[in-house]
Image 1 (tube, rainbow, N blue to C red):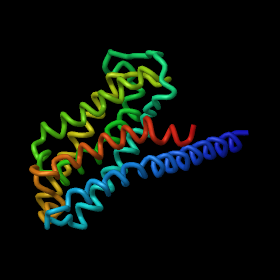
Image 2: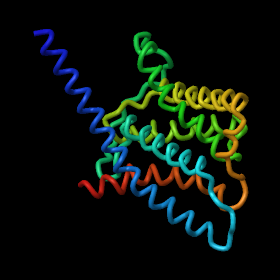
Image 3: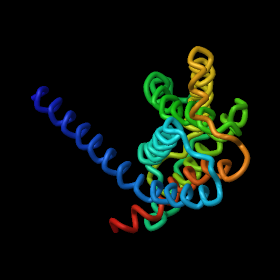
Length: 214
């Protein structure tokens, strides 16, 4: 009986992983199209080329953004309904500290790492951490309109994850200075690229992908 239950849990976990991968892949398509159009327009009248490291890094950043939105369960605009379930008391569940908090931190580590690595306007730690806080706050507020819990613990841990990611970026950059080759200037059209990735991920997961599969 126990072995059957364990196999059942394994099947549910496998289904969740496959479903999440498919959702990420679907959500990435509109963002990649928007990025392609952006770079076609940007290169008109400009000889500045994008390095391969920045290209692959920006793709990874978009994938990380979509993964965050998929895992956190951000609601689509077609299914929003106000059903607030909120917790404003930090660290009230000691059991949750050992597992869920760790997952929340790890979820935002790629965000805090890739953002300053790819765009120089985020090389100051407080800018990256503030962006992580803002993204997490947006997700928590959006969850007021879904079945998920709006939890201050998630906000704190996600922000901490952004800070950890930034620390790892500084550490890696110190020992591998060539990582700076992926970074682009904060001026010109480049400064709009991270916001296109972020806005594109939100619009894709809340509007475009749900509309396609309604």
